[in-house]
View (cartoon, rainbow, N blue to C red):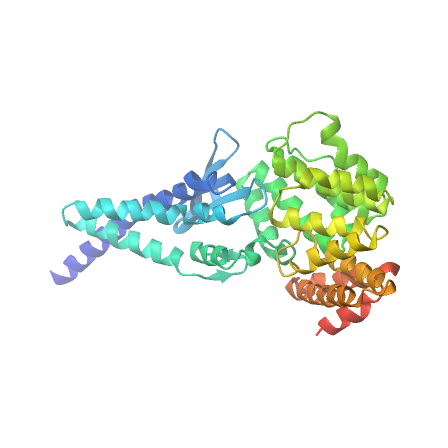
Length: 402
């Protein structure tokens, strides 16, 4: 009789788990989806289970809801930023936990019966699993992301170190069938290639048919920015300038941040064309934008002042040096610009400013190389050391190579 009771209890527990388990996971993922927009994200897919999807539904707005083969193994909510990530992204990462806290409060008001107790216990288990900071092979818990936000967000906002994460994202979104997620993942992989100096690999995206990005204005602006940067890396500054200005000539309305991103690409191309004054005018559209875009605008402004007034060059140099430890859109380009500024300042006897620029250039080069994946380090070192104007950086990156 005891054995039969144990078997019945086990079956009851298992059947109950198969009902309330997926429901709680779905509530957690729906919480992420509900808070995504408040956190500056757009959901591309969410669902329950892991593995290949057995059922999916295209929701209004482009998100894909899916139910996967291994129903009790967990769930996922994938969202892409609709601008550069900021501290408010904590709303998205905490969304699932907030829903679970609300559920726990509701359960406290209910009478203590078997089903209520089991739901409360599983709810606590899911919350703790997501709250504890952990990261493995590109996947991370909500707690890891929230802790990263508190620390300034470097590990989850720098693009170069996240190749594996974006490759996993591309595979997952392709399996789910999320168009916007696939486009974003492809763009980010190409972005990593550009930052690492792998222009040949990035060409696979930009020489193919133009991807469908009109689903989101920010993704469209990011596509134009990266396309322009690819042309510039291939020494086609005029083509880069045309791509950067394309949206403006079509009178397409973009957000202030997207406009600043495109202004950045335009100004960098104009610097390459020795049109420094026009570059500075283009950068005026990025005034007031904070975060990585605003920082990179300061570096491009420094590049535009290399042949200008000495006082302006020194001011622009210190402006970049003081913030060199923050997150940059293109840290390698910033390191090269700083080195060029150091040479100019040294030539004109501004030794203190030159020393500060050179030290900051070395530090940024070392940090950038160390943050890159192993396969990206060699082309990145080559990018930092090969151009004639920045050849002294070759010695710098050799120090960082071990």
